[in-house]
Amino acid sequence: MIDLALRSAQDYHNAKAAATNNSESFWDDIANQFEWHQKWDKTLDYDFHKPEVKWFLGGKLNITENCLDRYVKSQPDQTAIIFEPNDPKEAAQHISYKELHSRVCRVANMLKANGAKKGDRICIYMPMVPELAVTVLACARIGAIHSVVFAGFSAAALAARINDADCTMLITADGGFRGAKITPLKDIADEALEQCPTVQSCIVLKRTGQKVAWNSVDIWWHDALEKVDDNCPAEIMDSEDPLFILYTSGSTGKPKGMVHSCGGYMVYTAYSFQNVFQYQKGDVYWCTADIGWITGHSYIIYGPLAVGATTVMFEGIPSYPDYDRFWEVCAKHQVNQFYTAPTAIRALQKHPSTLVDKHDLSSLKVLGSVGEPINTEAWHWYDDHVGKNKCPIVDTWWQTETGGILISSLAGVTKQKPTYATLPMPGIQAVLLDNEGNELEGEAEGILAIKHPWPSIARTIWGDHNRYKNVYFSAYPGYYFPGDGALRDAQGNFRITGRVDDVVIVSGHNLGTAPIENALNEHPNVVESAVVGFPHDVKGNALHAFVIVKDAAEQDGVLVSELRALVAKTIGPIAKPDRIQVVSGLPKTRSGKIMRRILRKLAAGEHDSLGDISTLLNPDVVQEIIDMR
Figure 1 (cartoon, rainbow, N blue to C red):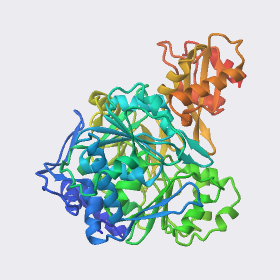
Figure 2 (cartoon, rainbow, N blue to C red; figure 1 turned 180 degrees about the horizontal axis):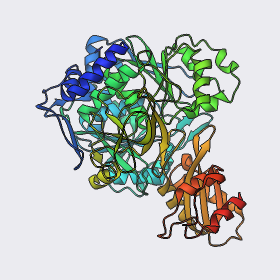
Figure 3 (cartoon, one colour; figure 1 turned 60 degrees about the vertical axis):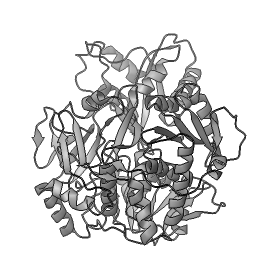
Figure 4 (cartoon, rainbow, N blue to C red; figure 1 turned 180 degrees about the vertical axis):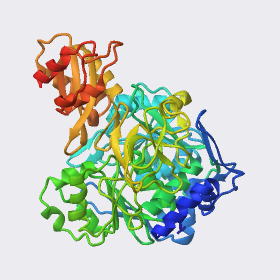
């Protein structure tokens, strides 16, 4: 294993000082612990005004050699991945580094045999099975750019992502197990591919065994795999070559394909994983996320494997077959670091604590939270019942765009504070700004921004660098603007206060309101809609849709069902609004802009703190909405 670890508060302060005094030298020392085919000529070149960021310029590497080959030499029999299936009666798999390397090389050869090459975009739409992680690594092995789409997304959402990146290949499965249900992935993929002319082949893994339709582009995974061996030298990549595209919701209708590079992403995910979770050789680490999200990319696959860790992949859900499944898996595999979302914690918190207590969780050393700020009640339940007040809780703040954790305590090394992400990682220059872009000092509340690049920052939005500039660098020139507000205490600890743009975090997933509104507006009876978030005791936030209709005589119940189904079909079930309210109008400025701030307060029931609404074009509609609730 490589040792990137900060083991004490003094180590943290030393690293922070080194990164502040000479950022390039600091990251050089860390990057030097990885294997490179060619050393970089220049550590960093950036301009936040263009914007342009490049790390380790001229460096040559392949990330899979750092995740696999080096450990095949040093710890071939160490378990790389523990796969825990959806059905607890199905045996778990323990895949060693040697076995994982062999599987990745075979799948890499399978991809090449079916036409894939360096620079091609390959879309992956698979359940949470080992073959998903193997395919991601196989793409990286041959220099193809992977684009993983969460297996809960609809055909329309899948097609949009395939077409945006001009993917030439799709990897999917016949179906996926999720609790007691089977998701018909192949059927959804078939519907999507009717709109995707660039896809030349579709490789299908047999997982559920259900009957599927067969098309001219389809190839069975097992048939294709029989024709290749496991000898596949890694493609040598430039540090700045794209490693993957991952789509995240935007405040306009079109999803944003965030592009992450090979070198900087590897260095930062490994460094942040090692230090936030304080991983030690022989530990078993489990992140419950799906690889369809950035958390799965960075902290199930790349970060853990880059430091030679044992990482758990879980196919199922926390409530199947019962609400103690997480704790049963922790006990079964003697998990040491457990990383999950506040949504899951709040859902499990509603059930008797005896479901936790009946399992031996004494192996746990570190608990983590990801996806959204954790509320006080959930933090203390997690601490009391899961950690038994013995496990530090790392409350991590970061985004798809950042590639890795930017603000978090380091488990047992720096002080934690309930509901606070606490301190920035060494090398992360986090600041608070006022609305005019002036930096705020000391205790303050304002707009969170980052004033210096870090290695894993997304380099662009695929095919639309101008949008990348406008979304992240135009509001406050010279800073990266993540779209979040925060407050900072006297000790410098940050607490994230929520989005300051039109993105709502639901169950830890960023959902742009614009695509949901676009879907609602497709209904023939909808004139206009506005979607906002409101606090939810399980999801953190849920969605409230205000809808103006043409024919108010249509039955509300029928309309609501149709609208929710339309959103699920267009985007995915996760985007369905919890509430849909038919209204005669929406509060707007005299220039016609919908006042979402007011709608958010109405959705949350905060009718007494609306402020002055007399400047609205139609102030009467606000009282009407209140009366209709």
